[in-house]
Length: 170
Image (tube, rainbow, N blue to C red; front, side, top):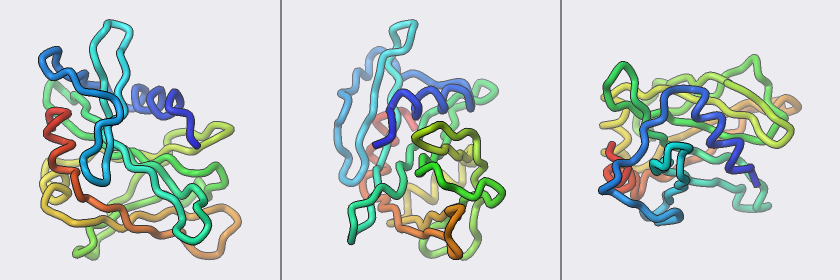
């Protein structure tokens, strides 16, 4: 399992994290259908929550990825970052990407860092991407392992994402 400290630390490096307002105290682990909250207190005492979904292979139970949707503040505006945490054996010259199940265009993510336990890629979502996620049912996500001849592709359910994003102010 990926270290949550790695996941949070990597997020904080990407953009300015947007804490949850004090009036919105959320409980760590709260489920929104297929998504759940991962919350922690920041150094200033504010609460910071990410909406996450961990994915494993159906046949083997092997870890495939953890997808996170993290609130961010970009130039004073509310934003959302999609992060992908994967096993470490990635072909870093080939960026991962995602697409909504009913679309054909793949939207690229960028590799950000790797540690001994995971690699992290992210994408700053545009407002129209967030709207499409809220209306969608699933996304197809993929990455290229270094020792594989084909990409690893998997579906990510969007069931509960709208309620989860509302809970974190997005």
